[in-house]
Image (tube, rainbow, N blue to C red):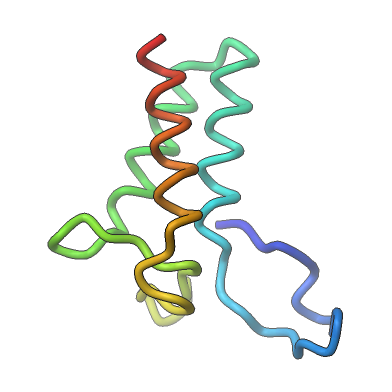
Length: 91
């Protein structure tokens, strides 16, 4: 998964230790698509969608060690990143 910043450090008054930032995963999948790595992009999107809840909703972060979504829920930025990536795949 993907972090917004190095979790061992504190940034902007926030303590480290947050979960993986879900939107970053979709952004990376989008970049892979733009680089012509469609299979890799699709694999990443499928993996990210596997952490959605039973209604298909995504949170802000994913705690890999606890295997659960965390942070703000539902998170619009995660869904916008998903939509943008899938729309690019369909273009």
